[in-house]
Structure formats: structure tokens, C-alpha cells
Amino acid sequence: MSREELIRVENLDKSFGELKVLKDINESIYEGEVISIIGPSGSGKSTFLRCLNLLEKPTGGKVIFKGIDLADKKVNVDLHRQKIGMVFQLFNVFPHLTVLENITLAPILEKKVPRKEAEKKADDLLKRVGLADKKDEYPTRLSGGQKQRLAIVRALAMEPDVMLFDEPTSALDPEMVKEVLDVIKSLVETGMTIVIVTHEMGFAREVSDRVLFMDEGIIQEQGSPDDIFNRPKNPRTIEFLSKIL
Amino acid sequence: MISTIIQLWTKYDYVYLNGLVGTLWLAAVTVFVATILGTLLAIMKLSKIKLLDRITNLYIGILRGTPILLQLYFFWILLPKISPVKLSDTACIVIALIVNASSYVAEIIRAGIQAVDKGQTEAAKSLGMSNRNTMRRIILPQAIKNILPALGNQYINMVKQTSLASVFFVQELMTSYRTVQSATFLAIPSLVIVGIIYLVVTTVLSKGLDIFERRLQANE
Image (cartoon, rainbow over all chains, first blue to last red; front, side):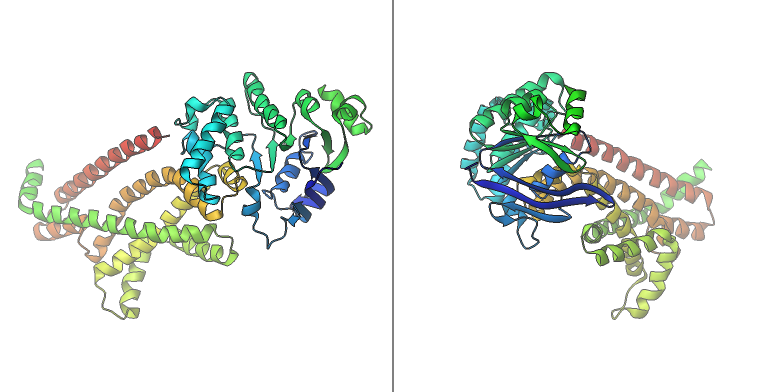
């Protein structure tokens, strides 16, 4: 691959007490790539994703983002997180702020974007995801799908270099999954670098450049969607896919 | 009996009303200062520095694990001995009440902050917000909705707890009872009057708090 490396993970370990969740992971994420991480629950895929922006502190190893090791204690992680957007399973929109304020708060506070400019950008983003008429509502008035679309544009407002999605549709009612996946798809089309932990195999197959299969804290197998879904080699991958497809 | 109560009230109403003023004032000052002190304690308790956490745990543990009357005696006797300035009985008792209440307020604030969903912090951090901004703009505005009603309850409790100050003849409602009782040797009627005043005050405050709480929730 000729593309530039955006994130490199070296010898990443993560334990919760005695429990080893990630075991010596080495992996690179390149600019413009769309990577899906699949695997059984408890396999460490969400933890891996959360290590990429240091929401989980690695027990060992390095998380190098644009040449800087985020796991280094001397590094101001807050600053780098501005460039790493994240979307959560449970949306985590801010209930005490309006839709517009949800989006503009961080850019105004942390990037010192003038309010007018931040609001203009938020308007544009809301239009893109079909929420323009909701901008003065509070999130309690939104459906799950709308909350998740809001969460996505909230992250995009920081103009990140990469977007991390942690099971973005798992908490949604079935009829709302598509509207969120469509937004992510449109993001793929803009060339955004995306890492997504998902149980939506059809989606992973359709949009990914690369699929990682994780189990027991290790990336057991990876390859193109075609390789992983049609010609899996690792017995664990085969077993996992036979259960869900 | 009822006529005795009415007679007592007509003759000594100013004593009871002065007592009521004393009670409300004591409770207000205590809760106000204890809120400031309790906030600092809660911050210490939530800090990542282990030693601070231990010290606050010890402080809160002692204050919640011993009777408030013991604490009042302790401060009432100790403070005049160690204070460079002369302290009145009332001052000693107010300080003791504040110290006691601060431990409860600290727990209220800590619980209010910790009740805010962890996902809120994670979302703010993932946007690159600093710890300070995350606390000020995301956590505290949500925590305050948990904290204010609980502080209101604490104030209502305080109204009742300050009655212990009567042991030291600090001006408040129970002291009014003792004053009238020793002047007239009428105990039960005086107690009934004071009891009714307490009931009226706590009922009004509770109702007010209810309305306030519903307002807070309506703003979601």
C-alpha cells in the first residue's frame, strides 16, 4: 500500500486486572482506509478501538498517531483526540445541550473557532444528515437513529483525520439502522479514514477495504472482505462466520 | 390544653418566632458554608491523588460514624481552648454543624457527579475536550440536577438537626421551648407549639422542593 500510515499500533497490550484483553497487537491504519473489525463479543475489538484514542490506557505498547506515541505520558492526548473522531454504541449525545450546541461546543471551546463560523458549519453538517430542522431541539426529543446521526456530525465538526465507530448501530431499533449506515456510507465516499467495530456483516463486506477478525485479544485473520467472508482460512474465523451468516 | 397552648402562644409568640429565625438562619448558614466545604471535599475525593482520597475518606468516615451531639460537645469544648480569638457558644456550635454537614454534602456532590453517565465523559474526551472543560461544560451541568434536590433535603434535615444546639442554649426553636418551659413550667403545650412550627416549616420546604425538582426535570 502506497498510502500514508495514519495510526500504527506496536505491541499493544491491555489488561483489566488479571484479564488480558489485548495481547501484543501490531497493526497499521492507512489514510483513506475503511477497516471493519469483526469478532465475537468479548474478543477485545471494542477495547482495541478505544485504545486508538486512548479512552482505554494501554497496559503496554505504543499507539502512534501521525508519528506521535499517544501512550507516552508526556503527550497531551486531548490535543490529538481532536483529530480522532469517535462514535459510540449508546450515542452519548449531551442531553443538556441543544442539537446545535452539541456540535459547536467542542470546536468553540477547544479549537477556538468563532461561534458564527462553528454554527455555519454545524448547519451544513446537519443538512447533510437530514437534521437541519432539529437544530434547536434537545436530544431527548430525537429518535435513536437521529441521536446517532447527531453524534456522527458532532465528531465531524472537529474535522478529524480518522473516525472510529464502536458498534454504531447495535443499540438501534432495526428500522433505524439503515439511516445511520447510510450516513457512514456517505462518509466513506468522502474518503474519510474509518475504523468500525460492527456486527453488520453485510455493511462490512460492502464498504470495507480491509476486514480484521479478532478473537481472544488477537487479530486472528485479516484481508479483503472477499477473502474474509468467502475464503476464510483461520478455523476461528470459519466458525464465527458459520454462526452468524 | 388547647386554651393553654393558645395562651402560651399569645404571651410568648416572640420567643418562638425568634427561635424560628434562629433555626432557619442556623440551617441556612450551615448548609451554605458546608456546600462550599463539601464541594472541596468532593473534589479531593474524586481526585486521582490517593493521599487526598484517603484523608477525605477518614474525615467523612469519622463525621458520619459518630453522633452529631458528641461532635457538638467536642467543638464546643475544644474550640474556645485553641482559638486565638474569643468564640461565642453559637460560633462554636455553628462551626461544628458546618463541619458535620460538610461530610454529608461532600457525599451528595460526589454521588451527583458520579451519577452522570460515564459515556458523557468519554464523548467529551473523544472530542478532545480538556478535563477542566469536560467537568465544567458537560459533567457539572448534568450533576447539578442530581445535587440541588439532595441539597434541599439536606437543608430540611438541617432545620431539624439544629435543635441539638438547644443543649448549648444557642438561639433556635428548641431553645425557645426550653425558655418558655422554664418560665412557665408548662412542658407539653410548649413542645406542641414548637412541634407545629417545625412541621409547618418542613412541610412548606418539602413542597417547595417538590415543585423545584419538577421544574428541573421539565427542563430536560
